[in-house]
Each structure stands twice: as structure tokens, then as C-alpha cells.
Length: 345
Image (cartoon, rainbow, N blue to C red):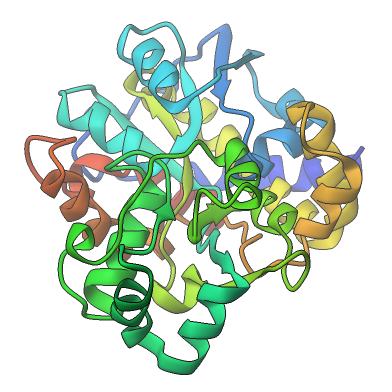
């Protein structure tokens, strides 16, 4: 467990910082400090939700006044449905599901970011060699040689990896619309290593620990690019809360305070944090693989929501372009910065 004295100091700092907090953003009436007795916290068992695993295993949720009940979901869409139906209070999931909910009129807000710059482009050695030699021209050369576009796997349209893949092709490499340059099979992250090994993909935009599982320099695969170089500071997952949580001011700040402690723990104890991830995630993520993935540039964990404000605006445009939202979701509607600003002062 974390040192209790340090946790107490942070809690006192939260209480002091709470004095005189002004309301900002799209959500109103945060003046009250009304409490919730229970708090359901949803998560999808993916590596980018590292904070939740640390908060669970290190007892950081104990500093939250409500009784916290973690609820595991198989996918982002499952969480979106439960959140939309008021079945859960807080969710650790991708920033794009949060956008979808806000676009549908759900009163809620992003409290913190969990992970940034969290993908690697992994490719076969054949495609990687072509990319190393010819850069952006590798795609057209591959198509001329193979008689087909390169197959680059990613999660569904409008997801964070899809948005970052589109950004890489369309903005960073300036190759035109994604569909004119590559074939994009939709492959769940957990199945991507198998799809690469079976020859179904030439490359993928993939998160950890699956990028590490594919193997950098081993078994005929290696990394072509890191998403942090392609799209600096882009968010992956966030901590997203219902309006009733945001209005319970002390509770929202306690959650952010615990999240900040988790960030500190991850940085100071990466191997232990990785073990916590493998413990909670379970099948398919061993301690060894989780620890190895912590060495990756794509294992990038933060709390500060301000860091992702500008890149989130750009992702929001891609999410709207593929039709997942009716309009571009603004930062004013998406973020609730007040709790973080109060705790981090």
C-alpha cells in the first residue's frame, strides 16, 4: 500500500484547495458538496486503464467517501450503453465513447486523462523495410508490387486508434483519405497479434501490451512509428463521470486526487503497476508481458486533462467525419476541469 502519511497530506491539500472554487465549463451548479453513498466505476480491461488497476490494488479508492464498486465490461460500446442508461457513475474508457455520450446529450464530463500517445504502428518486416527505405511512398510501392493496398488493422471507425491512424495517413504523411491508401480491416486489439502472425495484416495501429506481444524486432515484425511522434499528446482513455458525480464536489476532487496518486505510483513503481494490470485484466496479459510493455514509449500515463485539450479537438473532428457523432463535440461540453484544477493547485 502507498504510504498513509503521503495520502493524508494529499487529502488535506484537496480540502484546502476546495475553498473558493469557481464554476467553469458547460456544467452548472457545482457549488454543493453533496455526497453519494455508493459509486460504481466501470472499466474495460485494457492496458491504457492502468490508473484504475493501481487505484484498486493500492487501496486508493479507500480515500473516496463513497463505497466504490468496480464493474468490468467487455467493450467500449457496452460501457456506453450502461453509462447512457445511468447504470454506472464513473467510467474508464476511450475519449471517443465519451464524445459519443456527450453528443447524445448526456450530462457528464472528463475529469482526468489516463493515457496519452498510447499506440505503435507495428508492421511485418517486409512492409517495415519498404517504409524505412521509401517513407510515405511505401504505400504506393507496396500496391504496385503486391496488386493490393496494404492491410492495416485497427479498431472500429471513430475509435481512438482509428482516429490516430487516419491522422497518420491523412495529415502526417499527407497521402489523402485513408480508404484511398490502405485497406483497413477492423480487428479487436486482443486478436491483433494472431492476425499479424497469420499474415492477415501488413501493419496495425495498436496499443500496449499487444504491440509488445507482436514483437519489436522478433518473429518478422517491428515498429514503424510511435503515435506520440505522429500526433503529440493525443489522448487514449479518460476518467469520465456523470453529472451527479461532478456536482458532488468533494467526491469528484477525491477521485482526481486518487488518480494523481496513481500517476505518481505508476512512475515510481512501473513493475508493480504492471503486475496490478495483469492481476485485474487477467487472461492474455501476464506479469512478464505487462512489465515488458512498460518499457514502451506507448506506455504513457498522465492525469492532467489540460494536456489533451488541443489534440482532443482534432480527434473530435475525425469522430464526427465518420458519423459517430452528429457534430464536433467541443472541449467546453466534454471536459470538467474544475476538480483537477482545485486538487492540483
